[in-house]
Amino acid sequence: MSTVLIVDDDSDIVECLSEVLLHGGHEVRSARTGEEGLIALRSKRLPDAIVLDVDMPVLGGPGMAHEMMLHDAGQEKIPIILSSGRSDLAALAAKMGTPYAIGKPVDADSLLALVARALRERIAPTSA
Image (cartoon, rainbow, N blue to C red; front, top):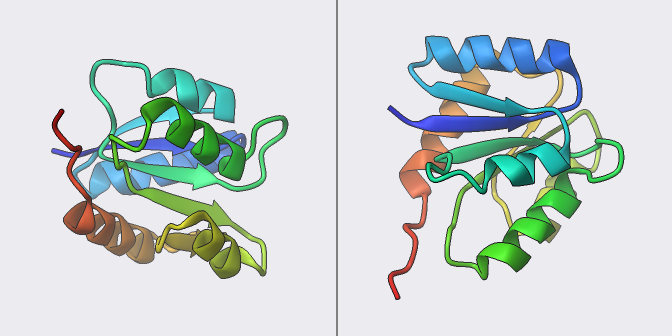
């Protein structure tokens, strides 16, 4: 069973995405801010994928992703699925180096398919 971390400041969206992912057979953890998301990544059991809201106050999705790269030194390649209602979402995802983006409102089947794709394409951590 894979674990998906949802990082979104909207509790209704977290609840909706959680239900979809749970019904899809995934374990779900959530964080309401980018800062909480980074704290969740300090646990011994890292998520297999992250659904990350772009526009959150203080530390948005791009900022959290940047912090992840700084602190992990690129060793852990957790796929990030950007989520937003922005019209420039695809361009932002490309700029951030992730091929995974889904517009809001999120379609359940599209989310499950994108998570499955991200998990299939996941790059394993490098060994030292």
